Length: 184
Image 1 (cartoon, rainbow, N blue to C red):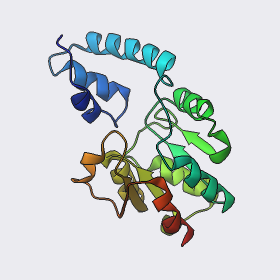
Image 2: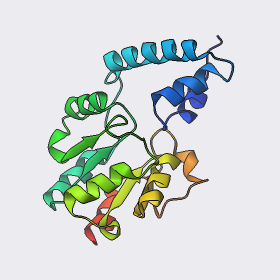
Image 3: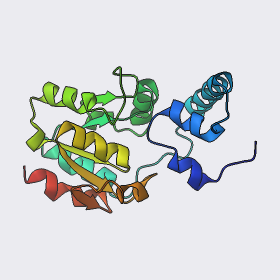
Image 4: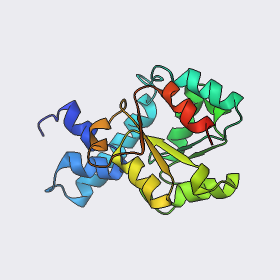
């Protein structure tokens, strides 16, 4: 197959690896080819997921300040849970998050609200005091489906998707999130 542009592949991200691989291989791909492609992708990703992964500017400072204010924070992603834990550990972020839920933590993935609903139950939070932060329309739809406020970030893999699914809050640096969170 011909290579795909980084921009095109990035537009496929957000609904889990099976969807990414299905889209990348195209509508004519057989189930067998998709299964083989997914197996290859997951193996490669597991071995190389931290090769170029780094925090965006302002993230460390925002996490420090929110943690100092005793704000409970969690990760909710469509990545496999084991990979998500490895990334959080590899970036030395584990102390900031009370929970890391991945795409295989529940029977359904984002944008289904089950992950946010579970986190709210665990923290005894309400939709009025819960905020979902994300870089794609999948994250914003997840927040909407759970009835919580949505914050979009202009950095990340799919900020252009926030045009079709606008968040309640839009920030360009994680430090801009702090006043929105601490007002609750």
